[in-house]
Image 1: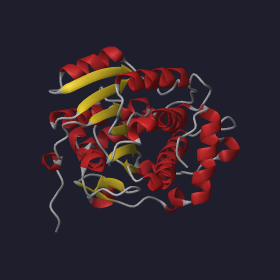
Image 2 (image 1 turned 180 degrees about the horizontal axis):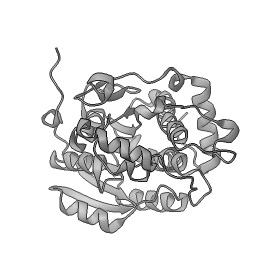
Image 3 (image 1 turned 90 degrees about the horizontal axis):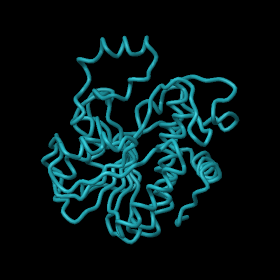
Image 4 (image 1 turned 90 degrees about the vertical axis):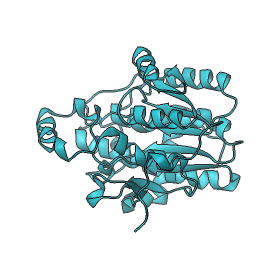
Length: 299
């Protein structure tokens, strides 16, 4: 049996610049903390700057805070401009931030909130920062998905923004499926360059604030199941392995190795057959470019 991959397996990160979205709490905080404690220069890209500063104060290492609201293309463009001005190179972008099972809402640009934040926001941010990663050998884009990509999940091109009907669970499934399709299509486009790779991860079932906007009944059930959840520092390990393990290959997907990928130490896992549909990946990419106005310097 292979050795369990833990925080102690994170290689020395000195000299690496990492940007982590949603890093003021939960999985993002633990990801940023462990990267910084292993030597990386880490940017906490967060919606609430004050909470970001409080999180940064709890981390030992080189940490800074960048305002970023993934539900606003204007904020994303402003954050990308700031990051480009202060960082001529970026070694690692961790697309971690997300919302889950929210009531029907829209972003500042009129996108359904879960798709807009979890997928379109990260799509735009990645496209605007990619030329800072491309020249850097070994650079990575890690996007956090979820086992929820299997639940009632499809890309509803005929009603992408859920204007005709709305399901919290199905909308979340669409957004998390989009995260994986984005990763696989991005890797295909990055491959000829030979420097940057795209990888995905998921945290299993972890104790975080992500479910705070879920339906009341869902929160009650989750409360009963809470003793089965793993702590955020364990949930962050698949992302950290995807971000730092020297054996990572572009296009891989990391998750907990335990039963049904609920908890456990990180390993390569599989995603749904739907997530590998190349025609849908390419169509989603084109639609995402149209909606965000962001085109990538690859592919």
